[in-house]
Image 1 (cartoon, rainbow, N blue to C red):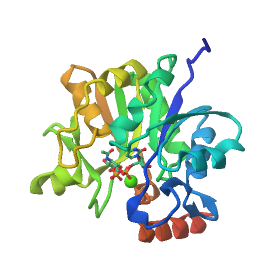
Image 2 (cartoon, rainbow, N blue to C red):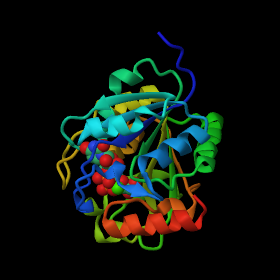
Image 3 (tube, rainbow, N blue to C red):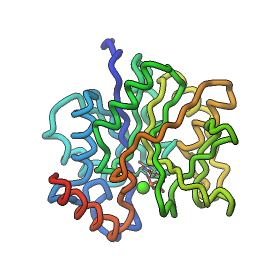
Image 4 (cartoon, rainbow, N blue to C red):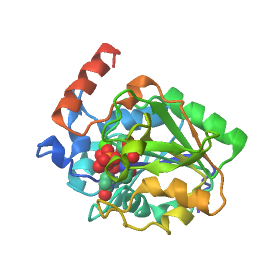
Length: 251
Ligand code: UD1
Ligand code: CA
């Protein structure tokens, strides 16, 4: 059994990306002339995260083939049916059983993720040792994104998906960009409690924070993400915007 005390990452990359209107799986759509997922894996590597578990599904073989030449400590797990982001991480459960260090979960459609943000999360996590630390930021137009709900003292309560949010909650501008740092046993525990009782009938990873809080565990959300990290790719317009932004940043 390998000694897994270093942090590892789970990268969500199984979705078709229906809104992209492309034959390619979303994570293989190119930005700055490379399939977007490479930038996510580069950022993890640059933050010192060697072990990378990639959840593949739609066109799994094409994604595996693209990443085969990267080398490093990459593993693939298969999500045959795309039943939601929480379900995707459930597919990594057995791979995570040997993981003693914490687990970062990130989305494959967010190539602007910054190694400096990941390092800030790792540093904070090492100090406060919560069950889960979420990286967030405030975004002027948060349409479509999960919102961070806090109580009147500013303590984190949960994430509510845009589609499930009330009018009042939709006014919240602090958003979830799918940048999670979990204590691994707590991740596994919360994954086992997920249900698909929501507007989209999906198993949402965004329910894990609330489930952990409800079982008395410590969940923190800190707004450490940079403004460029508020960009992710869900449609051709966002692909174009991310491509332009990355080029102007010198990628
Ligand atoms: C998700 C978050 C939302 C957040 C947003 C931006 C959930 C429920 N919502 O929404 O709070 O604001 O990202 O970070 O998590 N994927 C799989 N398998 C699946 C479904 C998705 O691997 O069954 C992958 C996709 O390929 C993609 C990533 O997970 O890379 C995110 O999925 P997506 O459908 O884009 O989620 P959002 O609706 O953007
Ligand atoms: Ca997305």
